[in-house]
Amino acid sequence: MTDAALARAIAEEAGALLLRIQEEGADGARGDREANALILDRLHAARPDDAILSEEAADDPIRLKRSRVWIVDPLDGTREFAEHRPDWAVHVALAVDGAAVAGAVALPRLRVTLSSDAPPLLCGGRVPPRMLVSRTRPSGLCSDVAKRIGAEHVAMGSAGAKAMAVVRGDAEIYLHTGGQHQWDNCAPVAVALAAGLHCSRIDGSPIVYNQPSTSIPDLLICRREWSGIVLESVANCS
Image (tube, rainbow, N blue to C red):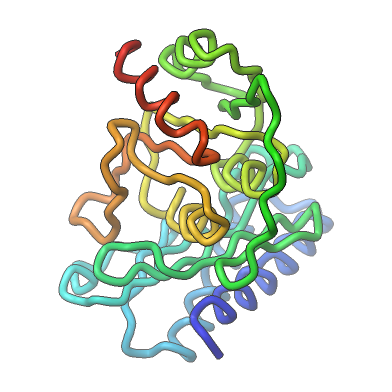
């Protein structure tokens, strides 16, 4: 099984588990715990020599000495999960030498899993563009950039759901500032890159994974025709 196929299979299995937990009325804490255990068990069995960085497990510094590191978020969007909204996700990704090379994002309530080995075909984008922002804590910079380029705000929950909305053609731009961690965006970036989208930090630099700090403060995932415009606007608004 390829790394991408493995990521897809594990993300789908974890997503199915989370749906069952949700139907039983359990909270996100149980979902995080049980989905994390499932994902780690499957990865240890299938790729025993690889390191793992998970939001729901203690960070093992051995990962910094490994070329191949799986970066996972068992439940991205705990608030949305608890509210029975559709915009939560499961992230399973592989970073090799700091690059997101394979991954899958499951959107269980939408019955959709997107993976780096079978990204959807990008169709024509919309003008003015739709920019995805946090539904609970949109940043001032994102609002300023959206106003500058004439973008329409679309509020949505988890990072994975927002990134996949661009991959699926439901938006053109996902701009984020205010802090994330490697597990919030490694799988979305792997899928977005495979789909032909632009992915970078908001200063245009590459996103590098398996760093000592798990923090990734900002990112841009968008259609390539908007990347230069958005990056220039970020620089002018900062």
